Amino acid sequence: MYTKGNATVMNKWVRAFFDGPEHSGKKSDNKRYDEPPAEGFTLKEGQAERRNTNQPLAGTIRQTIQGKRQGMTGLLQRSPTPAEMGEIIKKQGLRGGNCAEMTWLLCFAFKSKNLNIWIAIIDDPGDHQFCILMKGTPTFGSIKTMDYSGDDQWIIDPWANIVCKPAEFFTAFGDKMKKWTDHGKRIGVPNSTKTGYVWTPGTDEKYFKDNTESGLLYRKGWGFAT
Picture 1 (spheres, rainbow, N blue to C red):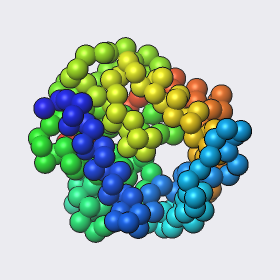
Picture 2: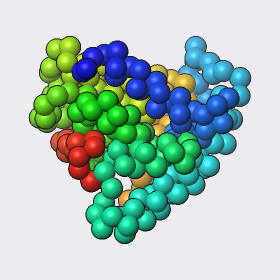
Picture 3: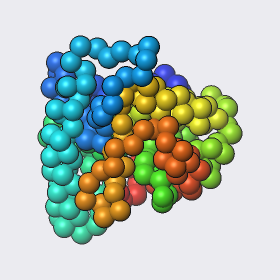
């Protein structure tokens, strides 16, 4: 059903997959520790080193996933659905990727439950995507304008590790960006030529505005192509 319990369990499952047994997964390639923690904040021993070592390795895995997506497109004569890509990620143990790859795996998980899961892609100049678990089709214009507080719609953002009601997402996303910034974590924002990252604090005014006020494009997680 469309419950917080289901949303939470699946979010944990996706994150555990990308973390891997005994932290053997590489997780995201667009997060790294680029600054020391702010005064009063600390990191676990080895946390920054492990993240920064895994960051480029995750990028290699993500490129592999994108290559398989291109191969599937040729084989199927259409783009694969998010759930189809999630199945490849799961079966081949590809434990590296960013918000896109994480939402694809989430869509695969919910397809097995036959529950409607929607990918919300933030339009330019934003650069992020997340999922919404709900029966109907979402119509929210942006993260900032989300206003629904019922118990049958749930935001699931495995990249940011957030599960919440739509009306709570703007605040929850802001809180997570502040937490990361305070701990010295930076987000890789694609540069103008899409050839690398500009390492940016999540609290950067432009970054936060671009991702919370830009429009949203919706795709059903197991019914439409990626």
